[in-house]
Length: 248
Image (cartoon, rainbow, N blue to C red):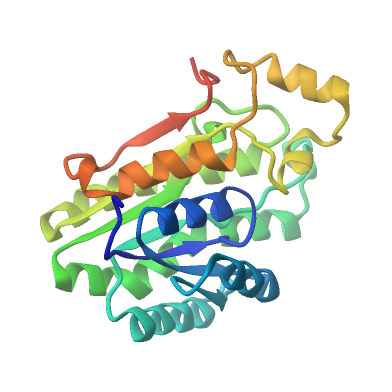
């Protein structure tokens, strides 16, 4: 019960790594808002997980929608202890000059602008309380970029830098900010990262991971739980590689 009595928002919480983080937080005693652009999936997951979970439809790239999410969380919980910026998208493997402007804008808005919007909506609250934990879900792509995912790589590198500068600025207010950097996992984005999902392409991808497997939602959830718990009270500005050695 490492998160007993704490409240959390997990964006992109209805599937993939986000759902894994939600479930772990609930097991550890937190009340969690599952915030997702797929409001129906978020509501179904909250119903399945029980009364400590609530759902909220949110478009993390839209300021008004993020503000509605923040207000709903504070009205329902009374306060917020943990914010997990997990929502993310990618573009298909494509030469950098051939990525459409529409795809670029989508990656920019969901992966980068969303962190600004949630900070604008919720950091005043955390600062006023003098306590809080923010976790940004970045990627090994921000540390060890792969060809043809250029603008996705860049967005995750931005997120790592944003994490560190947020950590420096918010530390005097008692708010910690960290990131986790997963390698690709069994999530809805896996096929998009690989371009095609075939046994041959999977084998080639796995050959770059020393531990020989993809990240799982449970891997991300365990790391997230630690960094957002009081056990990590002296850790801020870290970008933890949860990648099976991919970045070595």
